Amino acid sequence: MINFNIINMAWSYTHVAALVLGTIQTASAACDRATLQNITNSYIAAQTSGSVAPISSFINGTDYRENNKTAAISSGILSQALKIDHNRTTLDTTQCASYSELIVANSAHPYVIGTQLYLSNSMTTPEGPLISKIDTLVTDQGDWLFNATGTLYWASRENWGPIETASRDSRQTIQAAADAYLDYFRDKSVVVPWGTPCARLEGGVYTGKGAATDSCNVGVPNDINLTDRRYIIDEETGEVDVFLSFVSSPDSHEFRVEGGKLRFVHTLTVME
Image 1 (cartoon, rainbow, N blue to C red):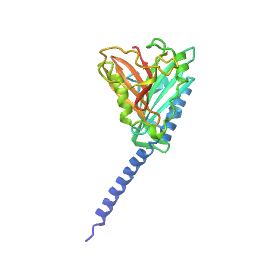
Image 2: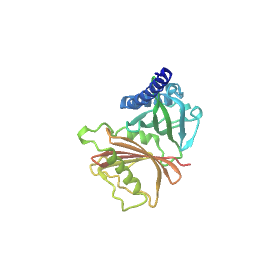
Image 3: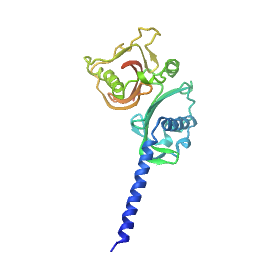
Image 4: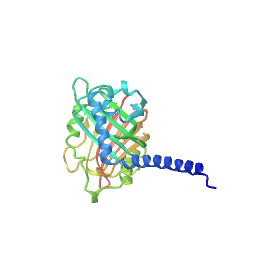
């Protein structure tokens, strides 16, 4: 005799599992450049307005950190309305994450902010995936070589635009170039893929002179182990941003890689 209760129960479990699986697949499939850019734009709008309202649909249990410390969104830098004079976004569709460089040159209180934003690959809303983590480095007066006006001047003159598809480096090549540069602080025998020209923007100090011979090989400290590296990689633009610990200081090193070689380097270091 057929037990319809068992059949109905089995169908119910299968149906629920399919719905759950469908939700997860939808969330993963939604991690494209347009979705990442839209949610990152909402984050930038939140920083501009000093209100979480633009991202309220995407934050639920979001891990929020400032300068490597757990913080409250309601009382952090996002609670301050800032006029952003320059921003640039790195989109990592593999990790469903982005990096934003924000420059605020307001003379009353200038900032240069770097934010890694991660989207959930399993939790979504009708507007898009939830933001699982916001990791922000906030630099201002007193931080390493800080000069927002200088940072704005030089950063706005660089070309970090899309690279032609046939000329793009792989994710592995881009990360390897960044790691070689960062490992060079500890081990000077590491072969760094220096590009020519290459310019480094360290705080507000720029090494580029606009010459074809510009180099980023202008010296770094010795015997420094740069640890706790977190990567955001965008193959379309040849970018990788790395959050790390510079001894005990929160730090960001961002690289533009062209043809496997370093083209630009941007750094932020919080002096605590």
